[in-house]
Amino acid sequence: MVGYYRTFRRNFSSVVRPLTDLISPKQKFEWTDECQTSFEVAKSLLCHTPVLAAPDLARPFKLEVDASAVGAVLLQKDSQGIDHPVSYFSRKFTEHQWQLVVGALAPSIGQPPLLSTREVFLLLIYLYPPFMFSFQQHKAEPPGPRPLPLLGNLLQLDAKRPDKTFLQLSKKYGSVFTVHMGSKKVVVLAGYKTVKEALVNYKDEFGERDPPRAIKDANLHHGVIFGNGDSWKEMRRFALMNLKDFGMGKRSCEDKIIEEIHHIIEEFKKFKGEAFDMSKVMNYALCNIICSMIYGSRFQYDAADFVNIVNQTTRGNFLLGSPGVQLYNIFPWIGKLFCSAQKEISSIYAANKRHHRKLLNSLKENLNPQMCSSIAEAFMLVQQQREVQEELNRVIGGRQVQGEDRQKLPFTNAVIHETQRLANVVPLSLFHRTSQDVTFQGHFIKKGTTVIPLLASVLYDESEWEKPNSFHPAHFLDKDGRFLKRDAFMPFSAGLRMCPGENLARMELFLFFATLLQRFRFSPPPGVSEEELDLTRQGGFAVHPLPHKLRAIFLTYDFHIYDSISDIGVQVCRQEEDHRDIYNVIRAPSVASSDPDGFYANIQDYR
Image 1 (cartoon, rainbow, N blue to C red):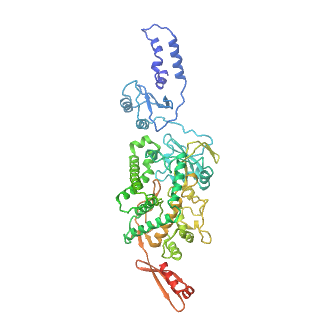
Image 2: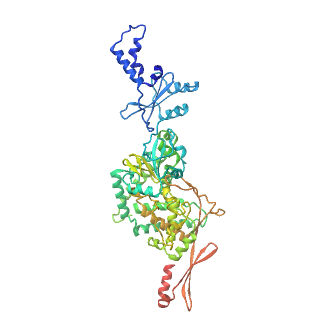
Image 3: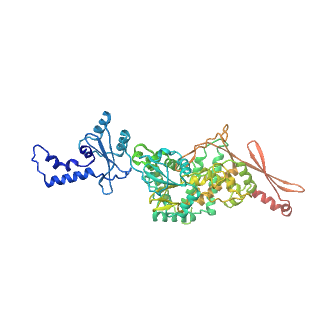
């Protein structure tokens, strides 16, 4: 038995050398103080099992085996730099396994090899030892599915759309539950009431951000989105202050958006009704609004540097949510070997920084103190266009839509909100982290725990929405057809980490959507029905539909002024391809009779 257990003890031969010498036939048997000390130390080593350390998967392991390879100890340095056992295992090796261990891992007998994390992981999988470390749970911690060693609950998650799995788990384990991403414990918050309570009522406790490993490697964890502490507070305050100074929520910002919309319209008209992928044009337009606010000018859609940086940024955001990078975030030691996307992400954002420095240096050289300029988000076009267009024609006519028109267009506003709700662009929000130990809804959550406020569960909450999984603009309309605000509408999150650009994004969504539907009818390519159009959503930093093409058919309007003995007015018609629709008739006999010149002048303004 001693011969077996000694394989688990470091430097055992040195410890018992006095006893070994004592039983040598060439040496006189004499029990000395040195022998007594050796005996006591050996007895202590063999009779006391050390407490196993919890493994840190981001640091190297050391595997110690004896010459017979009967047993082995997996070690890792503790905070004092001392090797501490993480796991033991033993088994009888086959001939092939024996050659692997001796030939590859033990080049010199008595010298324990220092293994890379990859070698340890692959060895453990190959030999399948009981490499079992405990996922011990505090009795008051949130419940959740039982994890597997090393992998946690990863095999239960949909790698491309984990939000779908979390929604299913919330029905079984409640609105606060635990999942394990590898060995990392993560708490998921589900449902409107729970998410709002955590982010608003417990905003300080759940207010920290937990930047993933890929974000840290790309050096993106010091800004407004992923930063923490006093520096984050100062940057957020600075950002909000300057956004307001640069026009967010003001007419100057609205003018920049409207200017960009006119460029979009001209770009869409170039395709003359042919199907095309409009996502790039929309990305360029949204980025241009930011550029016009920050740099004081916009870029042409065919400017090489501008196109490259927008496309690369889109690519980087997609990679951040890809399964490969998610694996890297959980197991960095595996990801470095198999995930090339992480290097690409770092390269993309490093290039972005160089590009922005170049633009800012140029701006410094040509700075006009009197010029203030500056931000965006995306939206998806939806069906039920005709109802929206009828409202636009009835209320707005042919003039440019303004931000102040939002209250006059309840159905259009409802369609935009319902599109945002159903689109669920950032279903997992951005990961939060507890700043201190907290007891929340009877569950104990330790300081430093990663927390996922599941926004998908808020926007699809069955207790808040009449038809949560269907496109239903009536969610945002009262019985009289007026726009209705809903507390459970939280696409921009809530609390301390609420999106700072929300007001700008709302203005962009309204002006883009209303103006484009005022000027175009959107439809699938010829021969493809709306049901056949593949809008399957794919994961990423934010989810979005698969690449697809749409037709943007430009609408023209004719105004026929009629003047009869009994009536005077204007008939507004929409010409679309080979048919003609009458949308509105304006009749104003009293105005015309009292001020005919003014009436005709107003007609020209309407036109």
